[in-house]
Image (cartoon, rainbow, N blue to C red):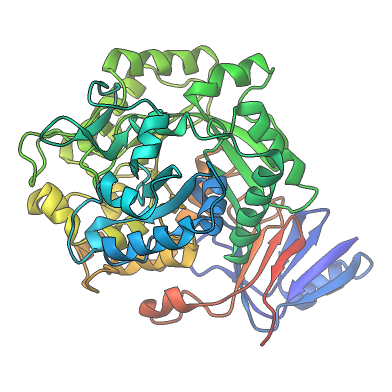
Length: 531
């Protein structure tokens, strides 16, 4: 039997300003839409449920195209350092938590960012030792491309003066050659490999906590990359499948890290398998690091580090082999590339090994580009998976990293769209806040959360473009543009309800709009409680 949704403004997103009065859904699908009275007359014998929107505004369900769902849950459950303004504040929080630890228990905290500290000095392992020496400590930088650890953690990982840098990583050492506790990119894995695996119970609890929070933010789904980090592919997939759809309805599209790609194949899975709510996606590969730790791979040296062009995670031949491995299975790739050199190398390899089955590759982030890279991107079938809130959190300090001329060509969302390059929008949570309205705000306003200044307004998107990237863009990148991302006949009945009309309010207030409800497959997954 059918449900009639009515009583509010309904944006279909099929084209700009397309509005209908009502929508009829049945069995999780949209079967019709248009004038309310006409629909009532046409479906009078089928409508058994009436859902009054009470003046709220309905959009196609928002989907985050790039995040780490379990990592988001960990951030919700671990110490959150992302708002702290000094290393002293961080150390105080670590000291406080240390008093609560059992013997040998790890102290893990998330989100420190020295760029927002009063003094931008990286914490030394000896400072961590002074507040917690008997338990191993790992503090993850907000970008997740660097950690700070204490001496106990270094000891457990057998990292010492003689330990060499792994490929794609760096162990920062002092003048005497001793490790400082600051580890970049692949060097982090030396620590993470000795952390005891999370229990099944805690893994499920963490995943549930994250999905519940995402639903409360108006998200009906997310493209996530977690399957290599929690004791392997099968265990992590099982954690998702034990929750979705039995506990929640939420469309998780699961990227498959290259380290567990063969495990997926040997388990008999191919792209798109796994179930409607736990769909397996592209092979995930990292090609470089991040700008914060100066490990993003640039074509020219960093403005504030003249001998450093960043770190390629893989030798170029090894990166090519990974792409060939994916192509042997007719599998798309999703490659993290922040620096312009990384994007250039990745784009050339995609051009060399194109997909021929209609599936789509993606380059994740593409933060620093240049005209040559833009031209390459136009020549290949690729979607750019971009994170708008990086503009809010990276400016103005990123100008110090890459210089004014490159900064003008960075985070170039409008340039991508004007050149016909397909894009999708995500948060990269837990690195950034997951709320899609913060992302839409950053797309439209480009205001720094550090100094409240607008940076390069020529790259601002319209509200329609911004919302499209969270709806149509996220559907397109995974080949679901025919049944997701719009309110249209035959599409899934996934809706995001907001208290205000994003297309009518002053754009400066977008970030303050309240989520009223989240509907997945025609069912309420979140409904705001009236105060």
